[in-house]
Image (cartoon, rainbow, N blue to C red; front, side):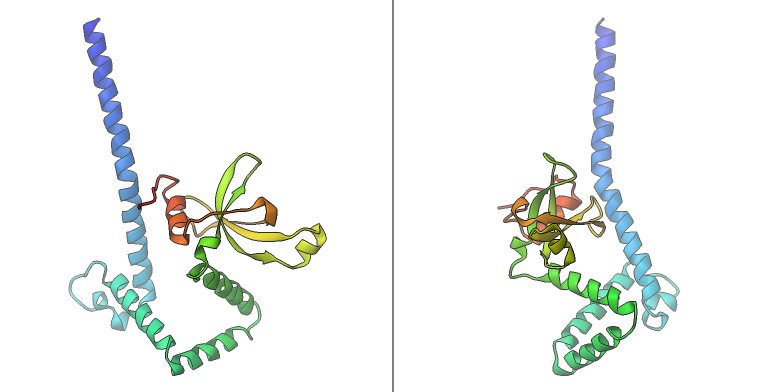
Length: 205
């Protein structure tokens, strides 16, 4: 009897160790996989003539991401200057004149501007009942729907983007009556962390 108890206790300890190991390794593995994906993507986007790994006898890990971050930062700084704004205006006008491309470009531009606002980001995080009554999901209110869909339903609708876990870049566009949407005091960053972590993140005071 005592031997059976010891065996069960040992098996329980091993099982707990295994579950703990899985919990520890999943975020580490996901982070490493995402880092590898970003490095591979940056190495393809970065021109070979400014990528040291294309002509050095050895590879420098992460240099593509570093150079990409520096390049993006420089572009951001230049875009704030007078000439930078004029160039961006010309590019913006050009993209908006090309059929099909202007539709995709305008949509991405509007979404980027919506999620990059800092003055009212706390007002954009909402709680909605989805996919059914009694089940709640965190989403991002983008704007009030004033188009044909609001007119056909004869309701004041708000557009809500509900991201998926753990990849918040994909999700669903849903339209809710304004009275059915609960606004939260969470910031965009806090809500994103909550979604990516599958609800395990905690707010730090």
